[in-house]
Image 1: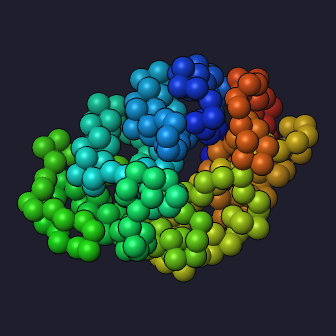
Image 2: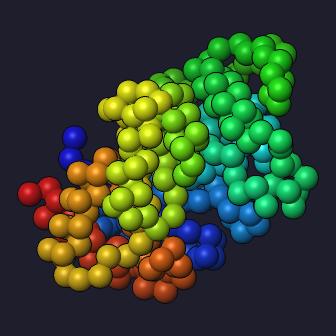
Image 3: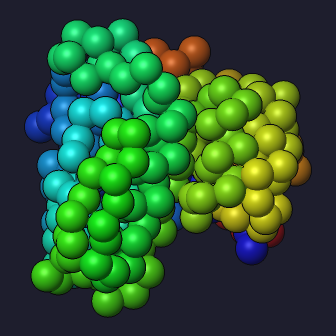
Length: 265
């Protein structure tokens, strides 16, 4: 599969910019738009709904929903609702969240990885339409089943940066989501850890800071990320993870008009 090229809408941009940015991503011919859920800025579910409603073709990914903040049954209900209403264009994403933020809302747990493991397993089963009963350390469900599960398998990515979480993503996720402005070395290491946990053919989404230079330079750099193991590179409009989105439309148009044709070739 050729490298997929996307754009990341970060919560540093105000919510009213989301629909115009989503339309710009689609008009530019990019493959994916990724939205973030950061405390205490913007909701991943609401953002995905807005982006899906504003477009007709692109895939919309959520990177990521923090497990401690959301009951797993509620997450399953919301993802299933979006997938049923606008099928085939959503990718879910869950992780253990930023622990300082989880502490701020009283949701921090002693073992974030244990929670993420229990949560991911239960969420996958719920989205697959199963009736789920589980009594884990953190996740407790008693005969819960979605009334309207997705009609086709909804991809569920697991996000993280630490070795244990990346191996968990390889084991349980439909792919691995790497958030933040990453280097090629970061992606290569993460790809190896994800392979350690499971199959080597699962998607790996890397969020990458703006790459300076002309289209040939950017495309060459993106091919290096692909060689390191990324199957999707989702670009930030800013550098070093900082992104105010001031010239997002111009940058998106540049990626679609000049960079993507070079990748396809």
